[in-house]
Amino acid sequence: MLKLRRATVVSEDPLQVTLDGSDEVRNAWADRTMTGPCEVGDEVVVNVEALDLGLGSGGFDVVHVNLTRGLEAEGSSTEHVMKLNYTSLQHPVGTIEREEGAPRTPPPPVLAIGLHGHLAPAAWAAAEGGAGRVGFIQTGGGALPGSLSRDVAELLDRGLLVGHVTAGPAFGGSEEAITLLGAIDAAASLGWEAVIAGPGPGILGSGTAFGHGGMAALDVIHAALALGAPALLSPRMSSGDPRPRHQGLSHHSRAVLGLALGPVEVPVPEQFRDLIPGEVEGVVPVDVDLDGYAGSGLPRRTMGRDIEEDPPFFAGPLAAGTRLARLA
Image (cartoon, rainbow, N blue to C red; front, side, top):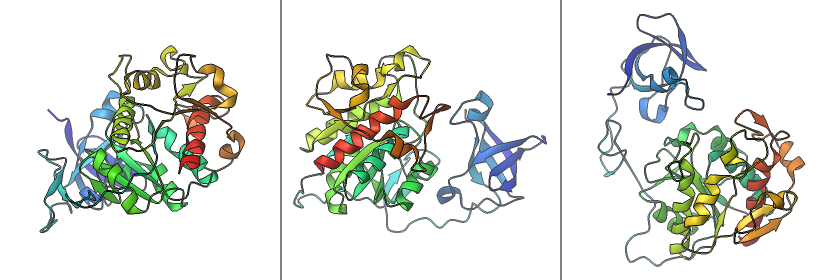
C-alpha cells in the first residue's frame, strides 16, 4: 500500500509540512501543475515513503493531493491521451507525434545520457560548440515529473535548451510525447538541430547488471538508430566515486554499449582517454573545457563531490556535448 499521511503546509518556499499528530517539520515537494498551489495552512495528503526510508535525492515527502484547494479542477474536454494512465494520477495531454501518413523529416543527431547529471554539462558544451537549437527529451528511468528538474528550468532560461519534451511515462514538460521514438521523430518539426535524451533526476541504481536507470540510454540509442539519426552516448566516468563499479568507465555505460544493436559514437575527453577500456568501440577523442564549465554557474557537484574532486564525471558529458555540436 502507498504510505500516505495527512499533513499541514507550514511553509511555501521551501515547501514544508507537519504530519498530523506531529510537530516535526518535513521537507516536501509538490508538482503544482498536478496538485495546484500549496499555501500555509492547507491540508494535504503526502507520500512519506522516501523520506522515511532516508533516500538521498528522493528524501522528501511528495504531495499527493491538496484537500483544501486541489479538488476543483475541471479537467480537459479535448485531449484523450492519458499520462500515468490507470493510476490515481492519470491526466490527459496533447502530444507532438507526427500524424500517420505525414512526410518524415530526418531527425537531428541524438545524444543519449544515462543520468540527469550529464544534462547541464552536455547542453553547455553543445552551446559553446555552436550547436544551435538543442532540445531535451526526458525519458523514464529517473524522476517522471518534468517540473522536478531545476537543471532543465535553468537551461531553458539561459537559452541552452530550446525545448523540453516528456516522453513515455514522463510528464509535465513543455511538450508531451506518447513514446520516446515519437519524440525523436518529431524533434526536427520542433526546429531542433540536436537532441539530448535521457532520464530525469534521481535514477535508480543497483549493483546488478541491468537493473538501473542508466539503461534508459539504450532505449534512446535504439530509437535514434531506428530513425536513421546519428547516435552518441555520453560516457559515465569517474575517478572519485568510491564504488568500484563506477570507477573508470561506469558499468552503466559498459552495459549500454555491450547491448547496443548498432554503431554508437562514444565521445571521450582527451585527458581521460586512459579510463576507457581498449575494447570499447566508437571512441572519439575530444578536447573539453573543464575550467569554462566550472565557472559557468551551472551545477558542478555530483553525489557530494565537486568538479575538482571528480573531473572525469563532468568531462564525459562535456566531450559528448562538444561532439554533438559538430554533428548538428
